[in-house]
Length: 215
Image (cartoon, rainbow, N blue to C red; front, side):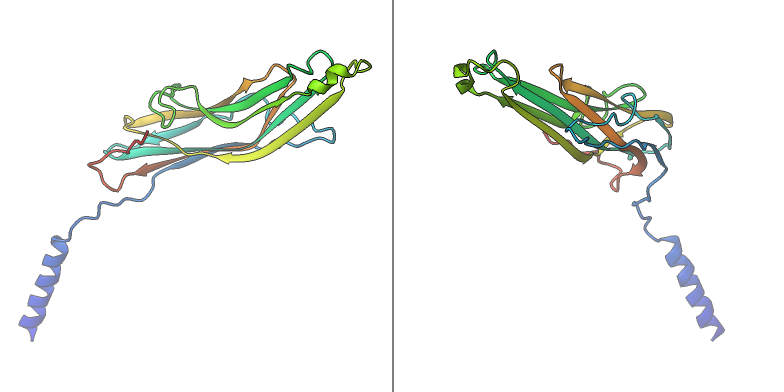
C-alpha cells in the first residue's frame, strides 16, 4: 500500500514538472487622465466653451520588457460643432458654405510616427461637418438687404477610438492627446468635453506575430 502511494506521488510530481506553459498573459498597467468640463448647446444654438485649451494632461506609462508588449490608447470625448449659414442678395447665388471639424492627435514621446492608425499623420477626424446653402431666388428680392435666409445647426457627439503602439523599448513613455480645429474661419464653432484618456499595457497572445495592419 505504501509503495502504491509513493508511486502515485512520483507520477503527480512528474506530471506537474512537464506541464505545457500557458502563453496568454493578463493585461499590465493602466493609467488615465480626464477633463470634466462639459459641452452644452445654448438656447440660441451656440456652444459652451468646453475643456479649456486643446489637450488633456499627459499620461506616463512604464513599459515592461519582453516581446508582444503593446499600449492600447483610448481618447474618449464628447464633441460639438456649430455652423450658422446666412444668405442675402450678395451671396444668394454662390451660397453660404461652412466646414468645421475636430482632429484628434495621439502622441507617444512627442511623435505620432508609430501610433496606429496615425503612423506619422497629424491625427484622426473625430467629428466634421460640411454644409452649403444656396437660394438663387433671393436675387429677385430687391428689398432683401441683410440675413434673408438663415440656417443654424449644432451637433453633439460622443467618440471613443482605440489607438495602439507596439515594439516600444522598455522604460517610461509619455502619452498625450490633443485636438485641432479643421476648417473654420467663417463663424463656425467647436466644443470638446468631457473627455478621458486611458492607456493600458497589454501583451499579444501569440508572441511570434506582431499586430496586423489592413489598408
